[in-house]
Length: 329
Ligand SMILES: NC(=O)c1ccc[n+]([C@@H]2O[C@H](COP(=O)([O-])OP(=O)(O)OC[C@H]3O[C@@H](n4cnc5c(N)ncnc54)[C@H](OP(=O)(O)O)[C@@H]3O)[C@@H](O)[C@H]2O)c1
Image 1: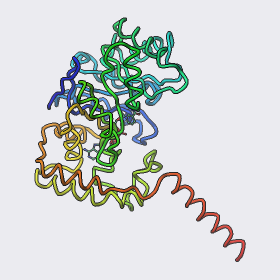
Image 2: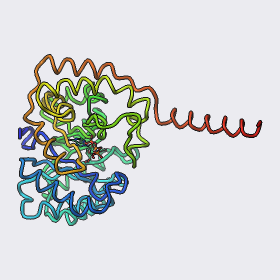
Image 3: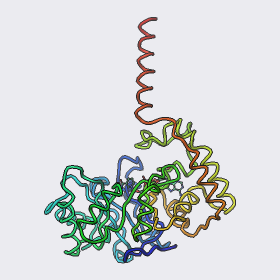
Image 4: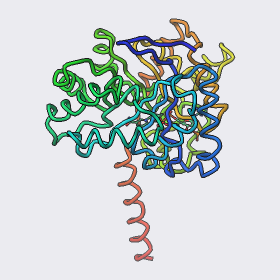
């Protein structure tokens, strides 16, 4: 495992995302929540993972509970990051909510407390005051944000009056928007970009195609619309090619490509212990410059063909035509 040391924090380059834990949206079932998820946490610790990401909203607190129980006596070996569901991110609500998260996690402080999304209605100064109080009270070691633009990140930091360590954003070979502003700023100021959905929710594993799509929430997300899955085929082909040269797997290459960017850490979710092990090993996979270039070019060439809204509209159109044809017949 490789570790990233930035802004007074030391975290494993590959962390573990736990949205899947106990969450019905992923459709992994109760045996996963009760047996597989705790085993994933324990094995991740064994192979050197320290960064564990959860959120109060994941399975309405169940993910935090599963993670806390699985870490058990090894809590201090972990860098635990959770997130506030920011309906009313002000004092004293933030304090109450943070304490509830700590209780579910079975700990007296988290290493990183993140605001899950910006709240456009609540003044930044009010949220910043609540965040500062958490830090001062020792409930959180570091503050972070998620899904914030650069301006929102900087504004919060200015009001908090100390570094807001990280911004957790969607970042993968299929979605490289963080490279425009967030990453350059993080690299120049000693902040971290935490890449979520680094495998595009499993699409970059190469195990899906337009005729074999996952069920659950992924069936309704943009990358898994059949046209978009087809559009990603050349990129997945490029991942396969590089993977073969390293006796590695395509998802490991997708993670290793992200990890070549300074100040980036990844938090892939996993549906099995084997996946978590394989993802952790990606931290030690070193890609050559020309491999990086080939993957970047393949990523540049990816153009999503359709959006969820457009696909929905065309489905409705097809159904209307069918009804009209039926009436005519
Ligand atoms: N802050 C936010 O708003 C936000 C949003 C989304 C996610 N997150 C965080 O980021 C974490 C990761 O994102 P994500 O779960 O959306 O997407 P992801 O990590 O890109 O994909 C996870 C899925 O990919 C498949 N997979 C993982 N490792 C694999 C491997 N080695 N080989 C083959 N398949 C593999 C598994 O699904 P199958 O085996 O079922 O295919 C797994 O559930 C979440 O758990 C959560 O902690 C944060």
